[in-house]
Length: 321
Image (cartoon, one colour):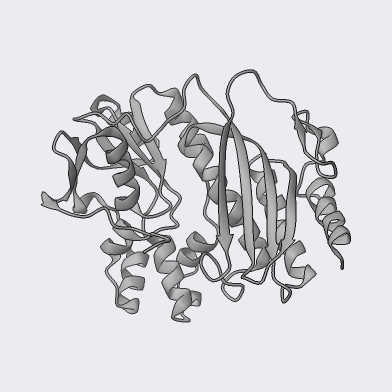
């Protein structure tokens, strides 16, 4: 179908499908898809904005994931940025760069995944763009959010003596991706799901922003070491991590053994986890353990990063390396 028929089909999915909110019933959206720009009713105060792009061959492969999963992931990685700052989703824009070999059915299936994730995170898609490209398929989402508390969490703010804490299991997505690369993804469905369908920790991020004892946070997209490195740089401090504190579930150890990789390295340097990394006052650690966070180490006056007392580089995913 031509561009305008495709846009009409996308609009129908996003605004009328059972897994999406009709813009006429969402008080935040005064004008949605179909005009030159969207018009939103926003609460008084501040708005947080983020954007991320998923590129075929870099972030996903159509033979590794269903189109709906790819669309849902495109939403989740953006919402994860909002969660890291303690913000609730407000609205999003969706843009496609479409090579000629991508059929309309695939585009609409990806859009259904976007709509489903938008419903899950209460994030209406209010506009976007379509363009052709001689390059690979690319999906870009720009997401807006509103602070859930009087403050937002940032990468700066970590203090000497604070404790580094993390949610979830790190390295699962990397192991899932490697399993797909080696053709053994069916043996590790949980790890593959972690790669295909990350979950943005919105409730956790908002709770952290409401607790003044949480001094800094970031979502783990490029790997624990790389993303902790961003916090250390922004805060002007260092950190010492305890490798024994990094949880390595049996399924991760089994997968790593079969794949011939180090499970700890995957946890330290693998990307795509989209868990939350927080720097917390020592007095608050017990409360955040109860909330499902795990302490990994401490913030130090001495700059740089150390693992078990030995210097280590903040290595992780880098698009330009």
